[in-house]
Each structure stands twice: as C-alpha cells, then as structure tokens.
Length: 275
Image (tube, rainbow, N blue to C red; front, side, top):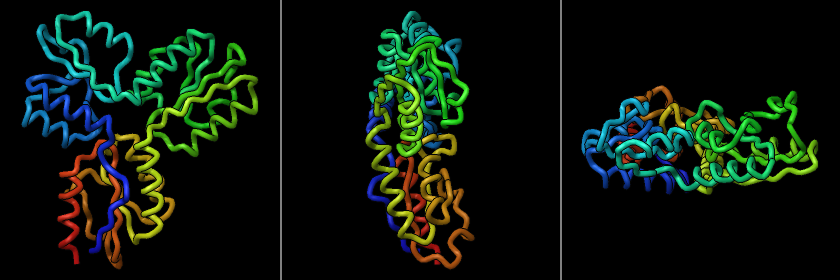
C-alpha cells in the first residue's frame, strides 16, 4: 500500500505547548482532558504521572493543576485559583483570544454570536466570558428565530470549525443587521490542515483521518475528506480494517491537531505490510 501524507497535519502549536507543559510538571493533574486524544493522555499519566480531574471537587491542597488546552469556564478558573494549589494555564492562546473578545464585546454592549458546538469545552469556556446576550449556533437555521437585544452584533468562531460554514453565519448576519463585527478566530493550523486534507483527498483512492473520535477538528477533517473520496476515521492502528483497502493503491493520511506523531507512525508501519 502506497501512503501519502497531507502537507499539513497533526499537532498544532497549542497542543505541542500543552504537552510540553504537562511533561515539565510531573506529578500533576489536568482540569479536564488536556487534549482530545486518549492515547496521549495515557502516555502522560504512565510516563509523567499527569493525572486527570473532571471536577473541582477532586482538587486537593498543594496540587499542581494544569488547565486543559480548550480552557475552562471563567468561574471555574476563578474558583480554582482561590484554592491552595498551583495553577498552570495551558489554554491555547488561540482559545484565549475569543474568550477576551467575548468579554470586551459584551462589556461594550454587543450581542455575541459564537459559531460552534455548545457542548464543546472550548465553546463553554468562551461563552462564560460573556453575559446573557451570548448565543451559540451551528447553522443559519439556529438564527432564524433569534431576537437580539440590539443591532450591534459581534461574531466569533470555535477555533476548529470550517471557514466556509463560518462565512455562511457571517453573511446571514451582515444582511440582517446594521452593525456586525466579525472576528476570525479559526486558528491558522485549522486552515492549513483542512486545506491540505481537501487537496490530498482528491488525489488518493482512500483517506485515513487519524484522531480522537470526540475531537472537533478531527471530525471536521473527516467531513472534508469524505466529500471527495472514501474516508475512514480512526484513533490508532487497532482500528484499521483490511477491507478498506481492497482494490486501492494510494492511501492518503491526515491527522487531527491532538494526534501525536507516534500514533501516525504506528498506522503507517501497519499499512506498509498490506499487500
């Protein structure tokens, strides 16, 4: 099986930074999963004793607590800092930016629209920096029955969403409101990985998208690839199925921003023995 990698894939700046922070602080715990990749979380726990807390109630005195890359709600961060613990903030800077935009916009009297998944931890965190005039939408349909307090609208996007879908939201708002402030908060790594996946998926016989199945950016990559070619989403080499490659000669590979190189290499090694 011939394998071709996307020109841009895998760990983004924010994830690399968070992993390095976790490795530097052994015998610590992360507030929520550090990244959306269970295998990498297991590696950090086994090799560096970096454990996982899912709630503030689990935090103990003198703990070292690392804030996840996706960030946490404002009030949770405030409560954590009031405890007798050491707090290390590994929130991706590209996530911190929309947090501050939402804070400033609501203070300035804007109604805020966040394009993203309301259940995603990043979006929950970003929304917490606003007030009651913040809504989260996934499509223009979600906006049809919304009545805004005024005609001053600010718009931000979850960092890992598709830029084409964000433009649909923005265009919808611009045509209906007098003042719309648009902030491009989709990170550069997301743009690059999505564009590279789109190009490669048009060149190959089958596409593998490697990453956590609960990872937003990985699911976005998969959605892009399956528009062009048979595509499969997998977390590691154990998910590979030989039937995917029947009659196929060239396999394309991309990976989500939370997917470590060692998992990608394990999959490539297994592909090399497929006849």
